[in-house]
Image 1 (cartoon, rainbow, N blue to C red):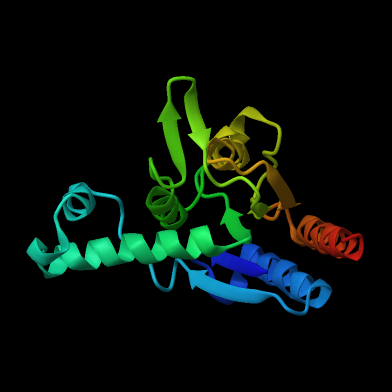
Image 2 (cartoon, helix red, strand yellow):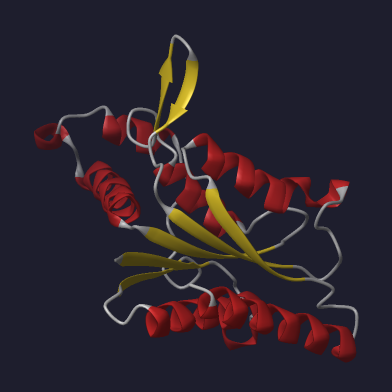
Length: 202
């Protein structure tokens, strides 16, 4: 099985989402020793944001692209190929200002592409990525899951990936991380316990 591991926090070793996403991947590897992992750190190696240059590069034949357009086209192709090749995806998605990090949104814009991961039909949109398993590590300083303040975070991710056909989605959640040391320790311990239970039952 091929697993794609995505980190997006800007906090480095101080990141709760990075710690938990690593725990998810380690538990998955222990449960399925033959797993192959591709790792992408969107903070350390940021993907440029979707722009007019991206569209121009996509619409220009390879032999006519300049160096900047060639870079854009190769970035889009590599990012898409990694995602499409994966049987499962682990995404670390901390909440920044009631949404996902801009680095993660830039990656999403490279993989949510009409004709590749979804298509429009006379009956409406159709996702083309069914069969993939997705684990989203959701972290936040406050308490937002199931609340209006979480719409641009977990609800957005569930909607987006459902739109491209991924319905097997599991959240590993650690919230209230800014509510003091006791709350943070409790939230992280509960998330770690959830990860252990998830893969013990796998």
